Structures are given as structure tokens and as C-alpha cells.
Image: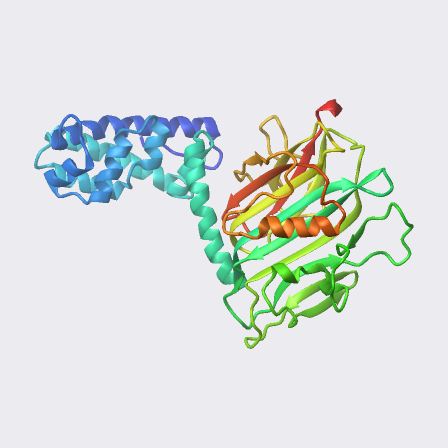
Length: 413
């Protein structure tokens, strides 16, 4: 009876079925490959012996030599490819071995037909147990997402960077954030589409001094109005004068108009300060720091987080990816292996940066350190020492929110 995987089958049973089919495929493949290409079969020998396509021959050999049955199930060709092998191998392999391979191939085909999602669903199951498989499939999916979203949204950039510096606020009770954002290699695929470049909130009209969260330009900007004071002209393409200012209640957005005659800036950089945004005394072990929804498809995303040496001496960072919504900050990453329904299971690693360094170069962005130093000097923190971390992602998924968190071990329990 053919194995069946329906929507109610538990994951453990599904994996066991995949392992069983993988073992059957290995047991059927090896005698045929050995008979055709010798005791140590190679793709070249297999191709020369029966005229098999080189790519198919390579995949068959790799599947037969896979370290585990789950790896084999990820690598093994489709039933059609296995039938091609059986058909061509008839000239050299024993009839019984070929018959066994065809029989197992049919069971493999029935498994694929019974499983919603077919091969993709099998790879998703395998990825739960194989980080290597998951990494490969995730990269393919993210690259496809970049291509499709670039077309749908009508724009993309090569590299997007954000550098967030947490420094003590003037009131001594909270922390400010100084952030530099950069888009490098920005391109508009459809010139008639308007493109939002930067959005920020207006300060409260009657805000009490000292404690209110305020979003403001870094001092020293020479700009004709407050909106353009957020831009860094010296680290952006010129000219940047053809921008529209769109105000919607408390949010102001700088927009490149949907006019094909307007020159598209290939590089745009901005900086701002968020005053009094975080408490110096976190309420729990894991503290939400910053969330970013990626609106621009990009090939490379680099997000840096720096914390002044004078605060949070024992803190270490974490990242998570979530579906955008109003309550994401209440669901920090979990340590028990479980997932909240808003979380998106994407791989990302955090690299600790050299101590005391203000800015670490970014591949493909030669003026990154200069831009960071210029902003910190203007903000009065050119001599401040920081501890820093970097999370770099290739082909990040657009419209998914990345969250920075700080973990405070001293607040355990």
C-alpha cells in the first residue's frame, strides 16, 4: 500500500515515512548504479556507460551517497528522472535490480501525489531536521521573492543599511537612538511609480520637556525645510531637490514623484534622532529595541546595533522576524523551540563587531564609515565608545518586520 500523508498526519509520522521511502530508494539505486558504473560510481562513468544527462547523473550519484535518508529525499531526482535511469540502465543492470528500482519509484510517485504541495512540502518537512536543506531552500525562496517583489513594487536597491546607536538621554532616565539609514544602488523599474524615500513623525504640539519621545533631525543639517533636514546630501546622489513632501496627520514622507523626467537618485542617506525612546531600567529580561518593516526589495540588508559602553553592560542582542502588526513587541523570541503565530522562521546570524569602533565597513559601500562618523560627530558622540553587533541578510523578505531585542541576563526570572 502506498504511503499517505494527509493534513492530519503528525510530523513525526511524516518524517518516518520519508525516511522509510528514502531507505527503499537507496537500496534500489545502489545496485543499479554499481552495475552500470562500477563499485565506485561517478557521474562521468554513469554518463559514458548509458548516455545519461550529466546533471541527472550527478544528482543520482549525490542522492545515493547522501549521509542520511532525509538528505537523499531532498536530493533524489523526480520519479521521471528515476524512470529514465531504469530505462537506460537495462542494457547493463540485472533485470531484477531495474524492476526493484521501478517499483520503489512508483511508491515515491504515489507519496508525492498524496502530499499537498508535493516536492516543496517534502523539502519543508525535511528542513525541520536538516539545517543544510533549510538554508538552501530558504535562499532559493528569498531570491525568488526579491525578483517578484521588485517587479510588483516597481523598485529595488542593491544594499540597504541601518545603524542604530543607543546613547544616554539628557534626563538620565532614558536612552536616545541615533540612526543612519542608507540605500545604495536604488533603482526604479517603472519610472511612472512614486517612491517613498523616508517617513517620520512630527513632534507633539504640547509635549512636556524631558521625557517625551521625539523624532528629530540630527543637529547641524543645512536644509531648506525640516523634512529635508533628515537627509545626508554629502552621502547621497545629487541633486535631491526634486522631492515631494507628503503630510498625513502626524507622519511626513519624502517622495520621489512618479515622473519619468525626474532623475532617480541611486544613493540616498538619512539620519535622525529618537529622544527618550527606551528606559534605562528594562521591565523584563528581553527588551524590544527596534522594528523595521522592509519596504524596499534589496539584495543585501545590513543592520547594525550599537550600545554605548555606559549602559546595559551585560546585554546581548537577538533578532526575530514577524508579520507586521500592532502587538509584535509583546512576543519576544522564545527559548523553548516554540513559535508564536506572528513569527516568521527565517535564518539570520548576529556578528559581534570590534569593541569601541564607531563604524565597520559594509561590502560594496566604501563610504559607510565616513557617513557614520559624520553623523555621530554632529550628534555629539564622536568620542563615545560603543559595543556593536551586525545582522547581515542576503535577499531579505520584503514586508516582513525584523525586530532587534536586547537580552538582560541579570533580570532572569
